[in-house]
Length: 340
Ligand code: ADP
Ligand code: MG
Image (cartoon, rainbow, N blue to C red; front, side, top):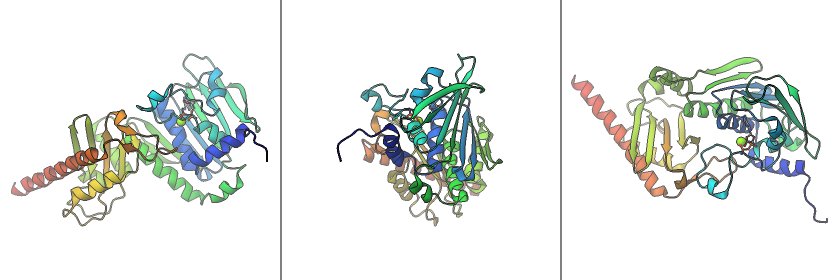
């Protein structure tokens, strides 16, 4: 076969293979875009586990009419200007791949209104050249993205989808991660027209406790040990399961600069900190690590589930130290209570 450039839709579908695994990955990319756009409220509507419809509405900054087409094309991003920016990325997105990828494997419409515009506009991409059509629409300030019939044109991927219930559970689990990291955001989630979650914005101590309870359960939230420490530009905050509590809790959340990541560093540090102090196999934790973005590389995996610390050893020791002293404090408090 002669060498030729792939048509845009095919190139986008290939890229979609990396970021769009299932409905939950679509929800993840779209909600992250909403948060990057400064939204304070995001409403998520799912039909049939997301295979039929995923609709995300936000009240963020919106996309200007003349940028709608650009937003749908590949490598189009407003978040990265140069390779130097990549060294210190703080937004969720930066690859400019999500919308192009998702729209190449679904029927995607994008409706948006910026504060400066008096009317809203709707855009969708059509055909293998992904020509974008734009027309007037009704919408308050912000953006709604509708993704219908995910994988309708990639049957092999469509067959990989599990039951509606399983796919919805993945979406729900993913939303919990955001709900914990961004308590100030109002998030709602519906499945087949029925409201399943309503995470109200949390600002006060008691609202924060309520958010923690909604996501991690009462048992964890009511007895959790607070973690808070800082050293040399590193900051660790969050909660640990009380070592006096023997329940199995399903709360294992770790964030680096606000981004949820899976990292062995934290599971290892938690295990070490709890050594000999609990019978529980995997004590629950909600931990947020803040550090200079230059000290961590998020560009390891297209879906950004993993990060690489430049000084992993130092970060590990700092986390372990923070957890150990939180646990020590918790034990000494409980001794005080017994004395009284
Ligand atoms: P990335 O997030 O990596 O920049 P995306 O394909 O996810 O790439 O989005 C492309 C661009 O479209 C973003 O950089 C942003 O400017 C715009 N955009 C996408 N979603 C929204 C939204 N909900 N609100 C405002 N702008 C958005
Ligand atoms: Mg994005």
